[in-house]
Length: 619
Image (tube, rainbow, N blue to C red; front, side):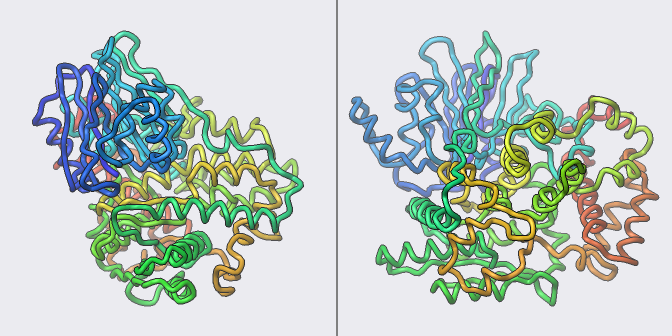
């Protein structure tokens, strides 16, 4: 696991590469290195998980140089195949196979990788060419800036690091605020910065001086799934899913560093915990699995510590109850905003950041999580509501509103007339065109279309980037069994009735897989989102309330020029009189955006502002 960065057709200096590496040092504190020649540079920050004594990057083989971020779980099999073809390897590090794999398969090398990864290859055999590739789910993001006028290309694993290159200037995207409030974070390739994109999942990009930048999409897991098996019983589906998850968890437990598990007390993470604990026991491990749960000082709604403790007792883990004081949240928000690089409207960002910091403080560099199960198996209430809507009713509109931080009706009230004229104009959609096309005209059932949108757009942008950035902020590698290609394909092969049926149940096959492995109290409890109880915390007398009032002051909003301060003030009055999840999330989202803007475009970042961004903000 690492962080990577580099440039092509740019005059990048040694000092510049060191500066960018320093900006993402937390994601790779064990070693830093880079290779640079005239016109290109590749750099790496290493977090040593596999073969700590080997695996020095950049990897080199003749005219091929590679840097790599992630884990390749089928590297042993690939190494054996490559050795049969005459290649030799000095160590058993998973990334060491990459130059030989590229020489063997060319630009299609990533099709043979099973894991989470972003890879950059510099090929100097003929015309210099840069090849970069991402995994099928988007677990390891890669941000890039391509200047068509100068042909300069820069990339990095994190947005703040990318901004460390001299050739990358931060300009705020005119549609950014609207996009963010419509989806809680930009979907697709977009970021909140104009001219900076994120490489989509399952994508290979080739950069040459002659042809510029070319992106090619590979097949994602659900696209390569076998046909839906309507004849398989729910019981058999649950058994098969348990066997499959057990194999994947077993593979993800392999590391040359201590491995822990995140256990929220809900179905998904608890099932991963139970399988991991059983596998370690069957292996005869002398060490029990360590589990981590987060809670908040005081008495707050939605506390799951009792369920997590029950799972720990049931599975025999060594349990760590992490507790953080909500009074510290205002101090944490600056760190979270900085590490994410762009706003994410989920309040759980603070908890995620604190939880992984506790994992690292306890001596663990790897943690298994239950992320992505809801997207695959139909676990969200917005899905159930969309499925329950009768034929002919508008189910797509309410579903899209559930994805938003601020519903459409309130967004129209919030925007100043000047900003509304720009972002609400015809053709200025905040969502990728492909998303609405899938909803309206996509193949398959309503549930199949919804889960396709969740996996292609929301999961990588809103969920996986958050987990990656906030775990690596503390030098912890998060491993996600539910994102493994075999699990994604299996979920796509399930008929709707084995996933979610309104009035009957959600994630039905997954519950069958967990039957007998988890306590009945966990299996039978009502579903609860893993999030921060901001409706209770965002109240007069709490530090978050005072902070939100300060950040969203009339003076700040007038200076911004896009939001009507009287409408924001009315939201505060509504939250004080009648606290609700919708109002509190809207205030949280607006506060997070203002803090992000201050971090990257405020007075302290003034040297990085550009005339284009200033022109946008002036209207």
